[in-house]
Length: 219
Figure 1 (cartoon, rainbow, N blue to C red):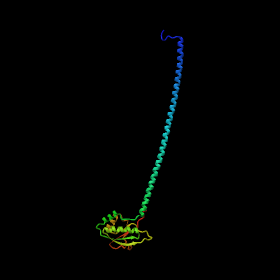
Figure 2 (figure 1 turned 90 degrees about the vertical axis):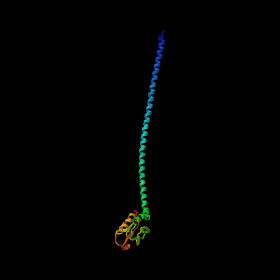
Figure 3 (figure 1 turned 135 degrees about the horizontal axis):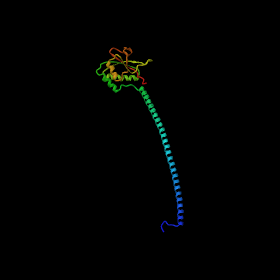
Figure 4 (figure 1 turned 180 degrees about the vertical axis):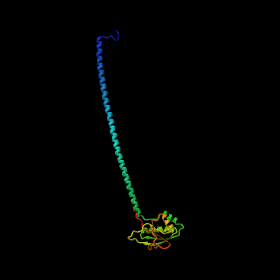
């Protein structure tokens, strides 16, 4: 009797168990495929949800970046405007301070005037307005001219009138060219006066007439 020789009854038992095993295997395969499909769908849905969330987050980030860029540009423009306002206020304050401050012959201007007039022999007549600031400025100019060896004679005091007063430092057009150049080099000369031998200025022969006018308005 060989290994494959079995009775009919045993063969029927084998068949029955084989059929049962096949059905069980089919069921296991079915549920395995079902579970695989179900799991795959859930995983795919979760992946798609995460991708959608990432897209939404990216879009939100891009929108926030755009809004932040607009706010940054707005702040930059505001800062530029504030800086411009500060500069205008600073310039206005400096103009006011300059308008209120007294004039002075600065050390560098004094040095330049003296250097320019070295060796020059001249007589100068200085007239001034009856204004404290103008008188102080005239005194500094007189000292600088004296230190340069220039003879200074005090002229008339011009009283303020309804007419617009002369402003700055003025000298007659026919004054000594070296004197004119010295005042110009030092940055003190404002304008030239017509040579009229005006008796009010006590202009005389051989004198160079200078008028120290009131301080010009800063603005």
